[in-house]
Image (cartoon, rainbow, N blue to C red; front, side):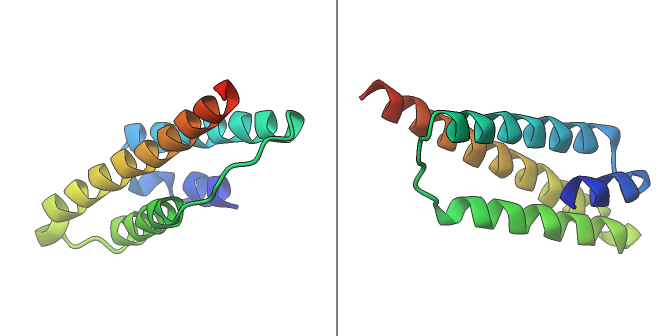
Length: 101
């Protein structure tokens, strides 16, 4: 559903934002398949929930943008994407670290 929402609203975003979201979702899907196939478990953190909430808030802010707030919205979007990737990389690190033990 999230990918469909991004496609539907893609005219409201910079191409790089849409591309980064697609890449992240693809990597998460591959990681999810790896966890499923190898029957691994991951401890879920609240950071992932916060990252997803930030991305959805970014989507809402971009759609109902106000020209006077465009700089703030761009900074918020950049922060949200960086945090989104940080959380994904943290999960990957934890998965690899757990796999080595």
